[in-house]
Length: 388
Ligand SMILES: *Cc1c(COP(=O)(O)O)cnc(C)c1O
Image 1: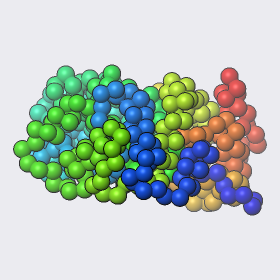
Image 2: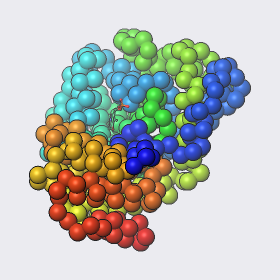
Image 3: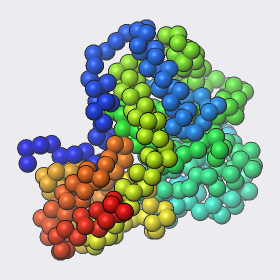
């Protein structure tokens, strides 16, 4: 196999040609008029993609973890109470970030493979006076999707701010930030938006901005402080170049291209495409006798799949053989199943051809690892969904 394998991990992902060429252009000055236009476009398009017409977008160099830390640094003060709802590794990460910023954190955990139970959240919210609550939309360690809307409604009824970790969902799963009353919805450039890695993306509601404005103490992180970034975002959106830290000009232009593609496709269509891809991949896995980690189809993410390796198959070997056969997939991440699971991203610019090529490569990988199945059944099952 002389061609490189297609990148089907849960980020970074394959880039559409328009995004790749934007990212390949020589850097321009951050004062350049073309850059000012791209940055303004990216900010306006974020509101559209997030479903947050009155939200305040922030685009800052860094990964998704910085986006999480921005929410924590700007919204909590020491001794504030935060409820973290967790369906895997990234909920646990959010708990650590809030603790680092001095919050008193309580965690509601879903059993492995399940979404967070709204009843458990209701009773936790009723037990304590929380300032904020986090939700992981899609936990990338389990491929479990939690429906944010009922959880956000419970929090809002009690005046609790809601923060959505949408790092593996924004641009692939349905999101209506304003309608669902989510105060902060955050992601990173390299996942379902299909831009290169390197940008932390946050949209804050008017309530979140008001909570930040009314802080009693300064934000304890200089770099993450919205006070430093708000004038920059307002400047570029208003057509005025501004400086706090050098903007990642190349990445911002690639992001603007990626967001334009999302807007052109339409979010309803884009979400439906991801649903079809997710369903097709899960059907393919099922036909191969591979068992998914999400407990039901209802809580399985559209943007990635996570499955148990069949008995007798070693994860590292499966990943290597599948890459040789043309698709790069990822091993396990959740500590309970790290060495017994694998993950496949099908988000961003993925189409039916790429999905089927991945199923084919996985079939070859599984066969070379000694897993018994009838060759082609995974492909046929996935194709049936894609063609329906
Ligand atoms: C990838 C991911 C993160 C972390 O993002 P980085 O860009 O790797 O820092 C956080 N939460 C979720 C759900 C993710 O998928």
